[in-house]
Amino acid sequence: MWCSAGVTLDLNLLETFDALLQEQSVSRAARRVGLSTPAMSHALARLRATLGDDVLVRAGRDMVPTQRALAMKAEVHDALARARAVLSPQQAFEPARLTREFRVNATDHVVTVLGATLDALARAAAPGVFLRFLPTSTDDAAMLREGAIDLAVGIYADLPPELRTRVLFTDRFVTVLRKGHPVARRRMDLETFLSLDHLQVAPRGRPGGYLDDVLAERGKKRRVTRAVPYFLSALQLVAESDAVLTISERMAARLAAAFDLVVCETPVPLRPYALSLLWHPRQDSSPEHGWLRQLFVDAAAKAAPGAHDGAKTRTDAHVRRTKRHVASNEMA
Image (cartoon, rainbow, N blue to C red; front, side, top):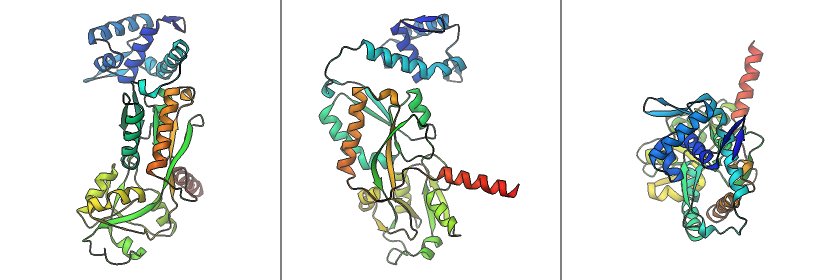
């Protein structure tokens, strides 16, 4: 049984409560826990009666949690995880017997660099595991806290102090353009670089970035004509236009030949960067999650060996915010 604020729930009902909050759909929640849709509807009715709250309400064709249910989401997920840990029999962890889904937020850059190696390692050690990759977002930290995802991989600005991090691999920037580009046979100097149209990859949808900040510090600005959320889409656009793209060297090395691209040094001094693995500390004692984290570490060691000296582990978004704040104070 699980108790909170005078409410008593059995463990099965707690599991359905968590599934409903995570999926926000009766049918998807039913599939998640192996119930029929009518049985899940009955469980939702029991939850509503027990809590005196609707839990999920209609919003058009979708269902959304009530404010009370949303406030309980992380607590319910943690309580279920603790209950499972307490009630699970103590036995040696065997990846080969593992049958579950793990959810990971990552860009297509990370999936391109690590995906094939991750797949091979996971299939060999735990063929019953399903890895679901989801797009990275500005809510990665909240999703980890709420248990909506198991891991996130990326480079971030400010992170909640409770999150665990581990550097997976480092990378650096290069510039790519199509082989038939008018300047493909010339040395890419800064003047030429700034005279061209640029593509930008913005996985989280934010304008600007590290390259733009470095150029601004030199009193320079590039002309960005297209911004897309995916690295692969940007490579395809570069291959079919006269624009240039500044992108991961590891990704360029893997795909330049396939897209018929020329790789050159970016004529702006840019620091290399590190991609980190993020998880919530509630997972520290989970052997399944520990195995998953090690899977990513092993894949990175094989697929992205070597480290770049001086690689930064945070984006400069917080620096830009600080500069804007100082500037606004000076103008006040």
